Amino acid sequence: MRRFLRVGGLIGLAAPLPALAAPSSLLSSLGIGPAANGGLSVPMQIVILLTLLTLLPAAVMSVTPFLRIIVVLHFLRQALGTQSTPSNQVLIGLALFLTIVIVQPVAADMYHQGWEPMEAGKLSASQALDAGAQPLRMFLARFAREKDIALFLEISHRPAPRNRDALDLVVLIPAYVLSELKTGFQIGAVLFLPFLVIDLVVASVTLSVGMVQLPPIMISAPFKILLFVLVDGWNLVVGSLMRSFY
Image (cartoon, rainbow, N blue to C red; front, side, top):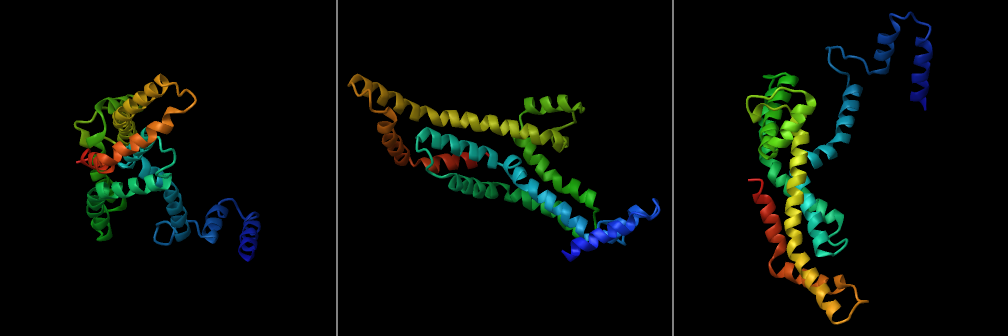
C-alpha cells in the first residue's frame, strides 16, 4: 500500500512540472527509464523477461518437434479408442522429453554460438542473437517444405534467398508449423489404418450375428489394444518418430 501511495504521490507531484522535464523525471523516479550506463533498468528488464516467458510455451509447442510428436500421439490414442488413456498429461510429458532429446544438440549449438561469445564480450546482443538463431534456422529449414516456404515468402512479399539457410525466421517458423502439421496428420492416417480394419471386421461380424444393440467399439477395443501390445507398438511409434528427425 505504501508503494502505491508513493507512486500516486510521484504522479501528483509530476503533473504541474514543465512538459519538457516531466516525462524523463517521472520515468526515472519510477525506475523504468534508461539506466545510468544507457541500458535498460532492472524493472524494465524484468517486465521484458516476464513477457518473453509468457510466449515460451507457444514457442516450445510450435518451433520444436513437440508439434509433430503430440499430434501423432493424439492420433494414436484416438485410433486405439481408449478415450483418455493415456491421459493428456502423460502424452504431453512423453512428447516433451522426446523433444528435449531431439533439440538438445540444436540448443547446445545456439548456446555456444550466441550466448558464450556475448558473455565473453566478443559479440553485442544483436550479433549474438543473429549467431544463436543460425542453428535454429538450419533445423527449421530441414523440415519445412518448399511449398510452405514459397507460400509465406509470397504472403510477406520477401525476395527468395540464395539458399534455405538464409531464410528469415519470420518465414521459416510458420512454414515449419504447416509442414509439421501435414507430416503429423500423414503419420496419424497411417496409424489409423490397421485399427480401422479391426473395427470394420468386428462391426461386420456383430451385424451378421444380429447383435445390433451392442456397440462394435466395445468388442474391437480389446482386440486393438492386444494387437498394439503384441507388436510392441509404443516402441515402434516412438522409434519411428525419433528416427524421422535424424
